[in-house]
Length: 404
Image (cartoon, rainbow, N blue to C red; front, side, top):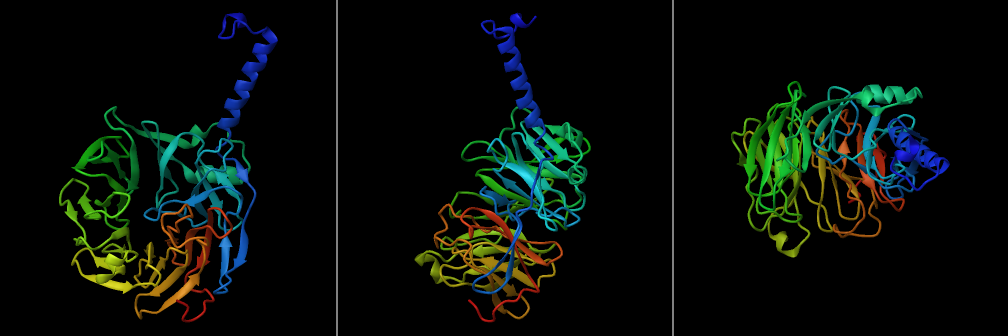
């Protein structure tokens, strides 16, 4: 009977109203996955280069692309997946925006974290509590695009693994090249991190390696299975930034052994055998050695310095798998295109951090990525006053010659 429930002092009518409100709130929350938002897409002409910028998001919400070390596009290239606080609860969730129509679809609505996209299959993976969840991204997007009523988000989900109680704070999830297993790190105190592997078929979790520092920015070689790259995270300049290890825990090694007067950051795979990274030059003491965007051959350790910009140098980098194009940004939000073959540099788009040349402000970091087909540069922008997702063409842009 109703009067035996949790609210003995309420009348039957008041209790009924409370229960109905609770039910509606729970139901509304369950319906967040698949929720559609109208297009916000705008074309903006860059005031300095004349390039047509495609602004994918322009609402007064904070939108942020997935970190630059991970895939951004669905395998068919039709959607970009991003994180935003635009949900009804004001918390950060995952969304997808159509690059053709601008329509936005909500993908998650719970306490989910570390979303990562598969490159070959229309699947996504994330943690919810101690569960590793596989999301059938293709089916969810298709259902939402057709305005099908989604009753439960779980109809698109599959639990792959359950983390044991002694693994806390799992994050930095990265999918192996074969997409049959993945790796994640767990920070266990100030001076210890453990990297684990998880098998998608069996759910088995295996310890790969333990390191005596905060292992962050875990990423995998998209072309070579079993190669993991990670960094020694300090929030600033690490004694030795870049590391690699094999999936079986063997051959843990420093990558580009750096000297005390070098500040290395923002490493990323370029192709099967090369990585890109930045050697910073924003402090006076760092100006005594070569700096800028570096390309390193992982098999021979051969290093090539590609370019350095003025005003403190480059900050983040991304490249095409054919090793022809590289894009770097500066603290003031300018994005430059580098031709690796002939060394030519062009300004693609400018002023996406309009109020600062300081990296430690709240203005968005570009964290730019190049689309798998090599046609687009996707980046975070503060041009419109908050954090938005924008794209510019990489190869066919109308850019002004010689703008540095």
